[in-house]
Amino acid sequence: MKGENTAAPAPAAAARPGPGEGEQDGGSAETTLLVRRPGPGERDPVRAHRRRRAIELSLALAVPAALILLWQLAADQRWIDSRIYPAPSTIAADGWQRAADGKLWPDVWATLKRVIAGYALGTAAGYLFGLLMGALRMVRAALEPLLDALYVVPKLALLPVFLNMFGLGEGPQIALVATTVFFFVWISTMAAVMGVAEGHREAGAVFGAGPWQMFRHVLLPASLPQVLVGMRVAAGVAVLVIVASEQIAANDGLGHLIFDSRTLFQNDVMFVGIVCVAVLGVVFSELVRFIGRRLTPWAPRDRGRPQS
Image (cartoon, rainbow, N blue to C red; front, side, top):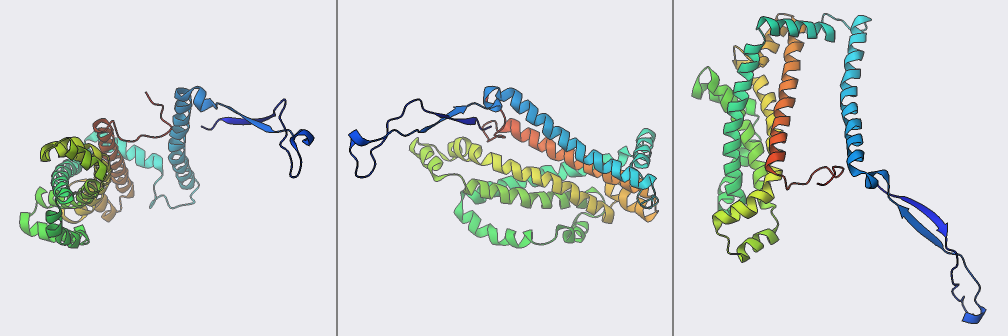
């Protein structure tokens, strides 16, 4: 936070001689002295950071809560058709009942295991290709045009191809997630490696670093923060893709639950599935973010966070 600036006149200030005047004829002039006082954030940065985080958390909770209350009010006052848009209380009661009866967890687990398997495969392949293409110019020249062409193909358009390759079952779902994640991680990794400052590379070369040492001590720590950003984005996209895929070619999972309940006009069940997808996406993305922060303690943090 900025400190406070106050103005106070100097007790005595020598006057500068004006044009055409000698020093002996100069008058007196008053100058302004700026005194900077530390603000609250500088006097107690830990307390200021906690206060700001409390405000941010309150806002993050208040906005969704206000929208839910507005939705509930609209349903109670019949401003909207509750048969099409059930009240949040109805959705919560139905979700709780399905969870207590054990009907919800098989679909959640089916979606979760597909996301985890596909994300792990896509991340590993994307990071390997991104690292090689970012570090080796010839590899990049050979593979980048092909991967660029495949990147623009809608990933759901590849689902029939994966169905022909793997048949019905888990294979097509996992392959679709892995393919989607691969491109996000590949692009972020290649850009991160190529963006490592030349001075870092030169410093490693001066100290006689070999290929492995250059990767371990220069390329990896310098590029990993940006790579983890791509992984976090890919985590959210993986959930979106698997839900769309399950609506087309699956007999279980949250996507199938949403599509099937909409077909049967069970809109309360449909919204239960949508809420579960939202929670799953947020938790998965934040988990990747949490792991990334632990793996990269040297990465830049929020400027408002006090330094230890």
